[in-house]
Length: 436
Image (cartoon, rainbow, N blue to C red; front, top):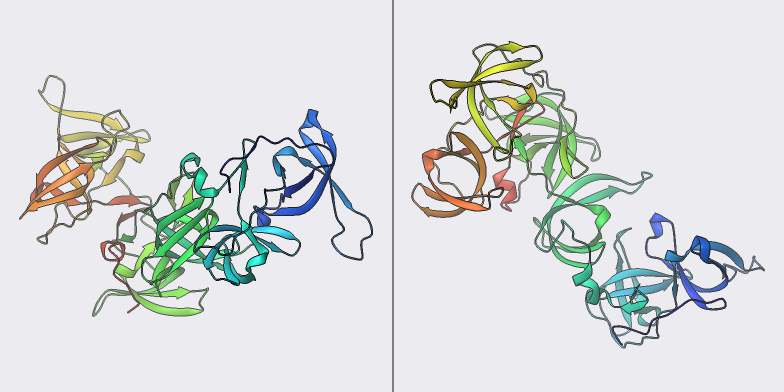
């Protein structure tokens, strides 16, 4: 098959395919429509479909935007389809795009990534999937280099939603950690699940990046959480906190109709991704609005260029209207005669994190830390373990690496919704967690 064809134009009387406008039928092309009218001023065509069944005697007419109309693809015959080939399947009178998940000489299993269904078809019902771009036919693999950028690149760590099928619309009831193994074309991805030996082809609609924050210092009764159970994160509510003999939490998992006990390691706050950023779901936490008082030791951040991502120690001198006057512990005035004082908005003030230095255990590669330099704590990640108590830390914003001693580093925490939150190392490293 040629990768590019001749430039094509659509005229009245041409046989065409029309892409469905329904989101639930994304990528469907109706077979054997005929152009019966052209409306160039509004960039549309009037097309005629054959009767959908014998009870209809007349053709169906529709005016559609020209972006939904394409010529009939060139003929293509293949005695066999390979694993993960992009194909179209003739089903219920229309062509549905899918991905081969089990090839065969006579029958082929095809996955439909949006509804996440797999069916078996005779090979005669299949054709290679082609895209009509800039008046040329191309195979999906030929357009890979021209696809728009995606945060779900090969190797990206993601979470895959599992849906409640009986709800309308279907809602996610659990999210399973996975890694992107391949991108087929704009919206289809092959993922490798992290805690089970399984691959799946899924639509972009079912993916989200993994939340950076996965565990907190503590939870309270009535907190909304996600619990790691049977290889996925399930939403639930903390019912009770047990302190002895070990700290555990009784959690209600409504979609599974279960109440179970979990260790803190297996819980995380609920996060939602809005406009490209993570936002914590509502937490019923009485300490969410912390009261800053005179003499309180805090840390302060800044939006000034060159200071983003750093926290500087200080002490609250007192309130100034809706803000607070803070004296820094290490930063001095321009003439270096006194410690610097500034009036700071509360959104840039937080308490001191629970751990001011790393413990005795060695740090691990890629572990997120705060490194003390330039009179403040700067977030980075361990890029290399140099030896006993020595590490190289990468600062993404600076695009550089520096060496630090163990006592110059501390675990990285974020102050979210009135709680200290940090990444869950055990689960992120791939160890399968189970409820205890």
